[in-house]
Length: 549
Ligand SMILES: Cc1cc2nc3c(=O)[nH]c(=O)nc-3n(C[C@H](O)[C@H](O)[C@H](O)COP(=O)(O)OP(=O)(O)OC[C@H]3O[C@@H](n4cnc5c(N)ncnc54)[C@H](O)[C@@H]3O)c2cc1C
Ligand SMILES: *[C@@H]1O[C@H](CO)[C@@H](O)[C@H](O)[C@H]1NC(C)=O
Ligand SMILES: *[C@@H]1O[C@H](CO)[C@@H](O)[C@H](O)[C@H]1NC(C)=O
Image (cartoon, rainbow, N blue to C red; front, side, top):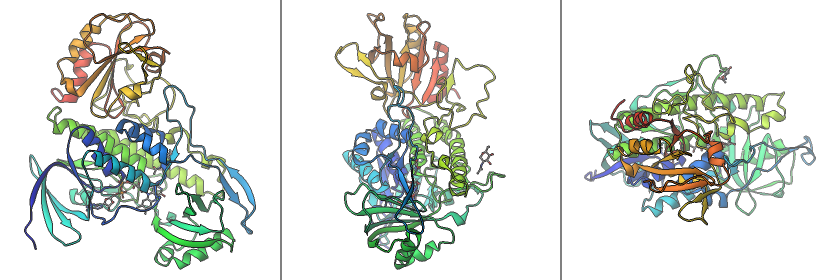
């Protein structure tokens, strides 16, 4: 065996799917360099996860990749259900509901459709701007934890040589069959329901025009502008393994399920089988989910062994982890912050599994009606919140609120609370540059906390600001929001002053025209605090930066 070489990187990321790529980009945007490995010799091919939720789009917005995602993606189309036998007569058109009302608070209001292969390509192009490339053919095989570092063994798939990588942190974004969870000994509970496997194929088809769509065999034209289609089949008694191993079986399956002999199967680009995440009968929490997202200096994010929690949740895991890791790596926060990754994400993932199982059960039930096609409401993920988190403070919170039992997917509408997603507010005008209008979504960023100060009468402004100045200013951006035509203090030490021309900021954050409020928006676009007093500001940042836990 060739001699092992030693290199060093602050963070080693094993697995370059959506979770690993999103984590790498978050860390790079925070000025933390990373190495990201994938054992595959080539990048993923395949449509796989195609729906990007509005909440995931907000992550892409913060990371600066949303324009590229939007430009490449398509919007959901109605589904035509064909009559069998015959397979030519459309019996109904179903619109899959994947949207909510656009409001000033919600600029991304519908799900967009983009094959996972393209989402990943776009993310890699953004990593490249930071000089970071995915190292292909590099497999993490083992690691050892030490008090202040981790040593990882990485095997080069092509020649079998190994490299020892020392790093401060290791994150396994190594997917459903990943090794990191196994080596950490993180436990799982529950079982999967093997019978609900799906056949997935990306292929060229002749005999179908791109207007044609189907269900039990679901056929969808992809964003490639040719005769490429993405097919999902889930017939009862289907031997998917056989079809995957011998694609000739596919022709028989397509003919049988469409009753059409004029459909010609062309080149198969990618074929696979997939088991959507399922819980069992709902009696026990038999979700095959990790009961912890990390140990010591090693964490996991993204898919777990049940076969895929979905891309949206994987990306949101990574985004929650990334900024915390960056603050700790920079020495600004204590390692305690890392435990809040588990505190915040575990209940969300548990609820996600519950929702997706119920949904799947309804969709395959004989009694399935239009409601089984509803992908709106909480599925848009705009209601996901961390109100129970130990690092979230709402000084307005009513005593006795039962936050622990709150639905982690939340309710959409209603008053915004600390722990919720921070709403957007357009129509803001810079005081220094009167012509420029902006929105809060352009003010927030993934590498700093934004302190929005609403102090319409100037009261308490100085004491709130003074309380902030004790903390690392490079981790903060301070924006004073004044009401339209409101008085602007002549000397005030903030990063920007914005006039709320249309009132969306004051309304959206539920701040009245009296009193003073500091709203802290975290790097992940979550409201960390509604703070009314200098004491509250101190409590919030002492917890965050770990001087008092
Ligand atoms: C075959 C298949 C079909 C799917 N179809 C759908 C679908 O139709 N709809 C849907 O919503 N979702 C689907 N999913 C799920 C969706 O793709 C995942 O939820 C999403 O990819 C999760 O991203 P991830 O980054 O956590 O994991 P992955 O995308 O699985 O990425 C993990 C990466 O880690 C790499 N890796 C593993 N072990 C190591 C190691 N030891 N060292 C280095 N690298 C390693 C792997 O090569 C892989 O590239 C499908 C998944 C699969 C596997
Ligand atoms: C989901 O949760 C609800 C309420 O807690 C429960 O009634 C239902 O059985 C759960 N479903 C599954 C599939 O676990
Ligand atoms: C992502 O979220 C959208 C919107 O809720 C949903 O339609 C899609 O199926 C989800 N996809 C994944 C892979 O999570």
